[in-house]
Image 1 (cartoon, rainbow, N blue to C red):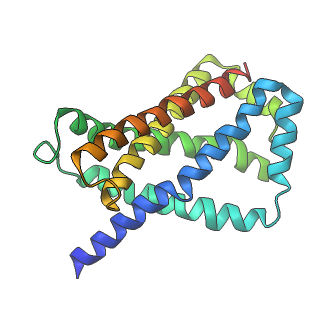
Image 2 (image 1 turned 120 degrees about the vertical axis):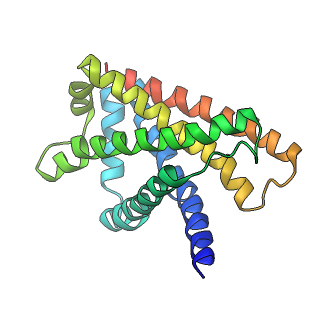
Length: 202
């Protein structure tokens, strides 16, 4: 019974990491990328997101609650996981360890980012281009955001590889090798989008 529950939780954790959390990450990076076209373009995109119907419902039930479960159960996995050298080769073992490390870094980054933006918005601050420009005007915060973005994107992209395996989508060594190339390509592409976006606020 306990094993069945563990299996269910791990499947749910994997699924939520892709849908909706991973999709939200991608959408968030794309919206932020409007900053590369200037303050007005970013503010229009941010305002559009703010005006979405049922925004609070979507934020709570489609973003925050799935993210909360993924984060809490992810911490449990990170601190109880056994080394997987016997299951995978040297490269995959490194990916396994980096997945746990970037998960922790991403959690710290997301909590801080939510505090600086969504929580401040609840107290009356306006989430716009100027807010982000003021945040990353500090070189330490700029570096923190770059590390956080790259960690979040790696965690998502490498998590896709695990998702494909655990859900039986890639079962052969060949398909898993192709999946590695695809997911690392996603990592590079989204990292470029995210880094270009944050540098646009500088």
